[in-house]
Length: 212
Image 1 (cartoon, rainbow, N blue to C red):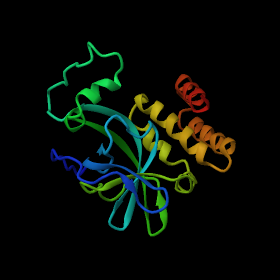
Image 2 (cartoon, rainbow, N blue to C red; image 1 turned 90 degrees about the vertical axis):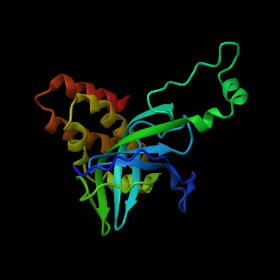
Image 3 (tube, one colour; image 1 turned 120 degrees about the vertical axis):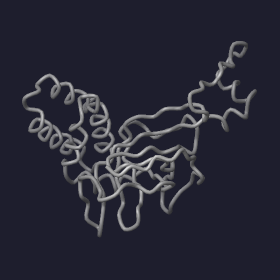
C-alpha cells in the first residue's frame, strides 16, 4: 500500500463542521487500509468501533476505530509518575498543567469503505487519507447510510481474530444508530455465519459479543 509516515502533530482545533459532526482528530499517518490520527483532546479518544469519516478531495473515507493510546510526545520516553502524594488523579493535571502539552492521544482506524459521487463502496479507497485531514465522528444518518450493506465485515475480519472485538463494537454502534436495530443485527449475524461458518467457536463468540 501507498504509505505516508512523517512524524508530525495535529494542527487544527476540535469543533464542528456544520450540524453536529464532531471533529475529533487529525490524520498524522496514512495508508490505503488504515490511518493514525492525533486526537485534539488528551485521554478523550472516540470509542472502540466508532465510525469515522475523513474527506479526501472528491471522496469521503470511512474507517472504524480499532485502538487508542496515550503517550508522551517524546518517542521512547515514558511520562514520570507524579501522584504519589495526591489523593485524586485529577490533581496531577491541576498541579502540572504543562502535562497536557507533553502528552498525546492517538487512534488507529481501519478503513472499511468510501463514498464517491454519492455512492458508498465498502472496500479500500483508491488512495489514502491526506495528512492533516480532519477526522469526524459520523452522525446517525450517515451511519445508517453506511450500514445498508455488510461487505465491510469482510475487511474487518480478513486480517485475524484480534479484529473480532473491533467488528463487534462497530456492529453495536451501528445498531444503536439504526432505525431497526434488531433487523440490522440479524442481517449482520447471517453475514457472519456465511463468512465464519467453519469457525464455530469464533462465530459464536462474535454473535454473543454483538448482543452484549
